[in-house]
Length: 401
Ligand code: PMP
Image (tube, rainbow, N blue to C red; front, side, top):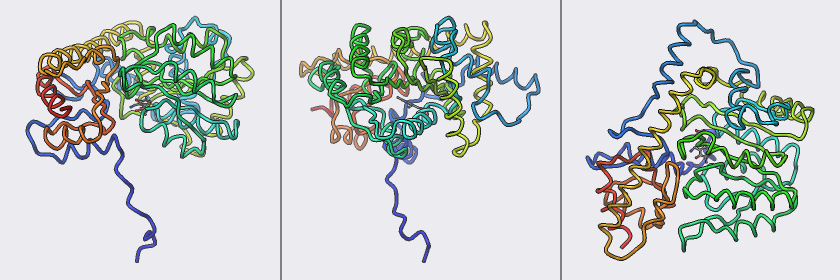
């Protein structure tokens, strides 16, 4: 008998498990709208030209593979904080940001969760309902208690703003409030700038700490500054905030695992202490982060000509998703004779659309139409081509009714 007899089979991951099922399907018409990864119109993975150029530079320079310090590549940490806050932001000028390179968005969130567990014992993290599936796993594994705040209103397929504010208000003082900086996953529904102000008011009133997850900077609207507006609004109020960043989507560096955790503190002294503790938490988990993606980001963001090329490629990717979104809406409106208003699709932003399909309906999408998607009704428009919009609209209309 195995010593691992007591180990039960784990269920497949609700998001990554969708890709496994897709791979196993042999149907011609199959479509993978599960995982949020950008595809070309030909539905192929895309490596950005600026990434290839940055990698060529690295080879030309003959750079070595020595260990990075625990906090990561200094040139990366500098540019990543500047990209997030803007280079002239007082939080940067006053050295009030503790920035540590992380294992992409996930690893950066996990490191922050470990910091919360160690220094704010018992403090709760408030999570939007719904949210990216991995958030709950991350806080569970870090032993950080969490609860949900209302976010999505199924009646309007929009934001339940009153519910959100009420739940944040009702939480114990000094809670952490996890916010999606832009392009909320899975709903694609973001607060307006006025609503962000009100959210900041309530968080300040309650002495909560805002914890931003920024996985789509530049990828949501096509503008790096525009997508960072929520974070900068909080920083401009002098609030202490946490911000996890990812370069998976906006630079297409999914497998390089490159991102960062930034903790904005009220003094440079506090930032230095926080950074020292983040390093202390990282050391026994993975010692130090990988160098390849960090160098790519440092090269692209640190070089004005590559930086401009990156912005153009990001606009191209964001633009393709917007075109697909429009075309899907056009087909749905034309094909669905029930009078249902599909305009919510156009109001959503980022790579996802929350269709409102329930679990049974998503099963019809997959079993009958071979459209692979998560059971919460989310589809990744980044995995959709203009050519497949009509097919998808047929599948959605059939599954709804
Ligand atoms: N947060 C959100 C909201 C996400 O959608 C994602 C990617 N799906 C991540 C974090 C982290 O992804 P990664 O670890 O690849 O950076």
